[in-house]
Image (cartoon, rainbow, N blue to C red):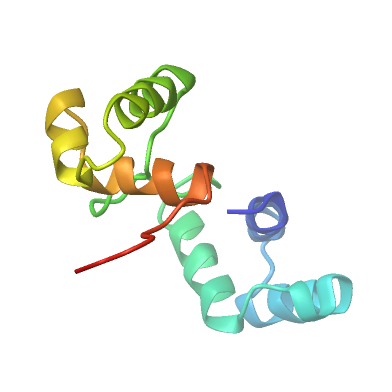
Length: 120
């Protein structure tokens, strides 16, 4: 999430504290942020949250797919395994490193820019 949205949420919270109506908050924000302004229903939703007592302007963690977490040690370990056996499968690397297949795939394809050369 970009910081512009967090700033806009803080503006909504401030204007709510100033006892502005939701429609007036949206109008004022639209003047300032133009095309980067939060949509109207989102603006109303955040104002309603502040009205019932929520004070946090950041998103709370949500369930679902986790972000792919890679670090230098994991990338190096994947590199080492591939150098030892260039015909190894992604799932075999994942099992050996106790990582998800998606994480290994991300390292191979996104970090190194490699892909399948030949498939039977």
